[in-house]
Length: 137
Image (cartoon, rainbow, N blue to C red; front, side, top):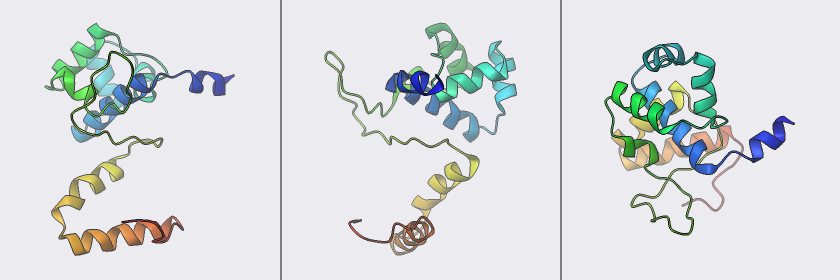
């Protein structure tokens, strides 16, 4: 039954949830702190972040205000193209793994490394994942 629910999550709901999670982690907030600020339970914040519950327009407005972020931030990089939907100006980074403090820190630190060291870090990560260097530019 849970599998059916997972398959019915709209990609935009999943993306918005990930952006909420990314911003929350960036700000060093717990799910409880965000929940208290916008008047929901921390379990509700978990469901928002997973995309299993949609964030209503009014709740997204409150989240954006609390995080001092534009509402558009939560839609930046939406990878989905649908009829009547403008294509995103910036290509999205779509993933099916949970955002963590560590993955966010890796993403923040990597661009500060010289290109040669970035390539070395990527190679180490690929080796740790047993992906090697085949077919990667």
